[in-house]
Length: 145
Image (cartoon, rainbow, N blue to C red):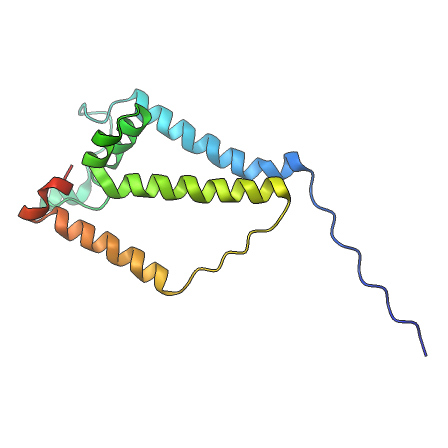
């Protein structure tokens, strides 16, 4: 009877510096974008393109006010950011939380186990749709940029 085969060796984790490359590059890109929007004021016309949906229909898309919101966040004005696009501010916070969890897993050398329930995509889509519709109605004008 042959001897049982030895289990394959565990994969050697990449060095920490190499593992940190992706999250730090992502953070660099986001910080760069927020720095640019913080320096080039979207409240002044001519710096950024106009929203095509707004210019053609007069309706606010879910992203309308997002640059003004990012500008306000870059300047530490959370009230103005929420007034420009509350959904974008929620998105910034969710991104920060997900990025932080990613960074913690990378530093620990563990692989995150992401289990996204199927309804979550539908729920996010529904929230975006409701936000878009409500911000274009008279009673939802407080959500308009």
